[in-house]
Length: 181
Image 1: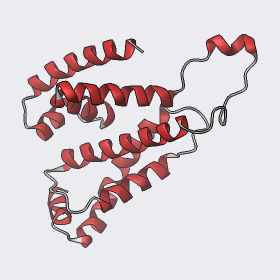
Image 2: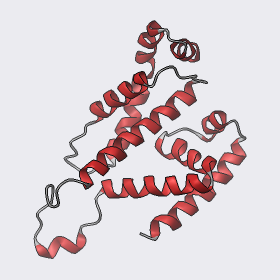
Image 3: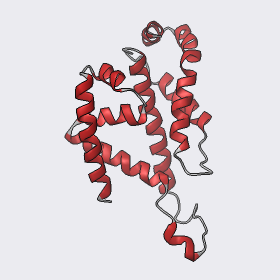
Image 4: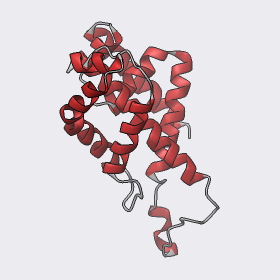
């Protein structure tokens, strides 16, 4: 797979054609995990998320892929960006356009939509990146990309112990940051 990624990065379109069947199942698993946390009736479906990610990856030009873990890390970042952009665009729609009608007695039980949570998490990750880019990247790779500690360490070229230490610190920082809102 790494050889195909390197060839694709050098502009070999046939390498991309051979790569897609190898990565499709993992991309589908990632997209399904993202979408399983979304609200019921979400207009963006798993397949659409994969297709949009594929288009953005292909349109990104020549990428210098390091290895399999790097490819899936970038894919996770692309999927995250698609969902955050989608959530933001829905939040800017005309007020009340997608309001859910509930009896008044059920209103206190309704929590913030998942989309708002995703936007808040994205904003918190951007704030974390301003303070510590590596911790933000670790969260993105582990949480959004589903990479293991070892794969994350490989992508970032740091030790697995450093990944674990910074992963723990980043989670505490994000929890504190998200509890402010």
